[in-house]
Image 1 (tube, rainbow, N blue to C red):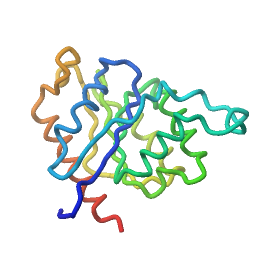
Image 2 (tube, rainbow, N blue to C red):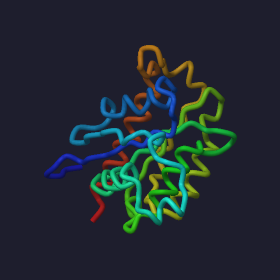
Image 3 (spheres, helix red, strand yellow):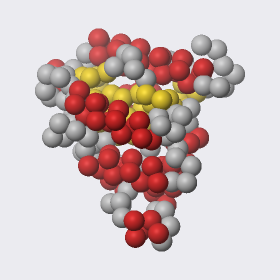
Length: 188
């Protein structure tokens, strides 16, 4: 992959908890990204008001506009999220609902990678499935492989130190970020 400028990715965290497994992953993305890729975090989904068409009629909230502008300016989007009740967390779904209503949907045509981490064995697979369905409507270009579903996260991630303790997990995330960089660099 060769390009003249660094690729800029933004990460969207679906968890509100500061020391969640997924927050650990999101905070480590810039360390795991390939050379020539910068990763920065978007504002918290907790700062986005509940979607309300009456509120939208008064104008988009600044938090939504800023998030949309950051995604539009980025070369790729990385969504890191837990699984709640076999699906995506409500706060993440709410943020995506707002983004879908912006005049120029910022996710449309954007390369997107999904990472989930869960204490359970399947690592958030059901959340990824539902998120992929949502991203179809948003017209995101979801990276299919490699998928990153971090099961039994407590044996791979340490919220106290903020580290990804498992080398295979770090390598797998790095491979996904490299694949996203390749996808983003090909975007014409």
